[in-house]
Image (cartoon, rainbow, N blue to C red; front, side, top):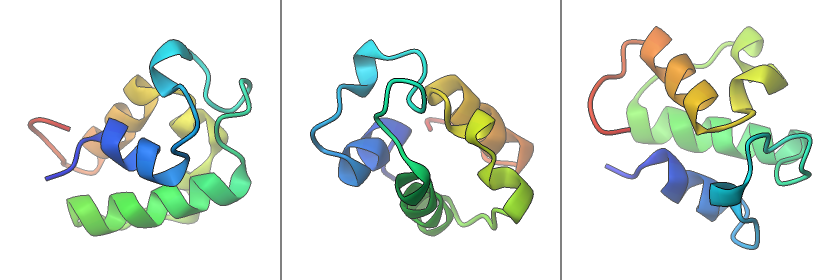
Length: 78
């Protein structure tokens, strides 16, 4: 299973996600990137993300993405 960081890198390979605390404000993810990442997350983790899950606050950083996944029952190494 791919990690969140691997999915982020696949979405925007040029971005330095490890150095950012806010992917949106730092310009590492835009609205299209969030949609692409959401599809990758659904495919990788077998969850369905509703429209309300696509809020920028759920994609600010790895912890926010991890919390969103946990709210959908995803456990383990994510």
